[in-house]
Length: 182
Length: 134
Image 1 (cartoon, each protein chain N blue to C red):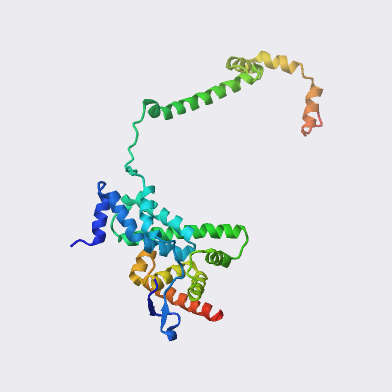
Image 2: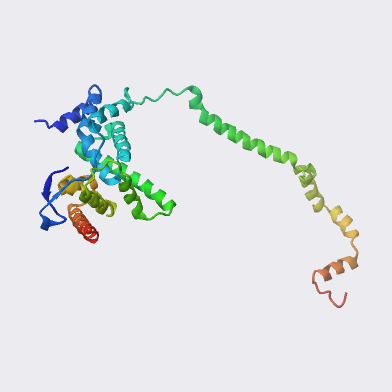
């Protein structure tokens, strides 16, 4: 019995059905990928641009997708790479303008207009943004998306043991961050 | 996103609303796919046929190489044109000089014009001891 993903993959490979299948792929994955990117870059406008880049790159490299990994894993990898490249560019600009490292993440959060006003959630965002990038990615996938370690390992190319350590450290640091500010 | 589950950060509090606190413009996800598909090119962009190479495109690298060698040859010839001809004696002239040095008349003509004094003076200048009995 074919899974929904494998059926979608087959239609993506067929030039006759590729375009319609890609529209379906966008509808299916735009929301999880959006939140994946948004939690990394914080800002809606940047996330919107990056999400479009992700799907453009996916469309242009569809032939390179061999089906060894799941479609979702492949798309998450592209999304993380896009977000990381964006953050590196921001950091480079920040270094050039001699700002402090923390100010970029903090500024992105404070300048974000699309928030619901929940103070606890805002504090958690600040705490997550204070983590090293890798720990942020692991924490977001585990805490918010409730992904299995095996799934995260496939996307990030890291061992399950290292991911568990990374998540544990992230939780401890967030806990400390919130306690210091309570 | 707003479900309430066991809180790994503050276990004593039991639960934690896993809200991100972030929102999106109304209808954002509903309209995203449609907007995105408008950006996707309608034709098939990945099948790129290589255009046929013209004769000139095939010959061009060889023509450029030939032109380069011709340029080097010309440069070398131009250089030899600027060098004065007197400073570059011909092979025949050099051969004539060598022949004259080997002949007896050359030595007798040349040696006759050098006096003993000039010879000793030259040897003295170049650090040669003149024997006492001379």
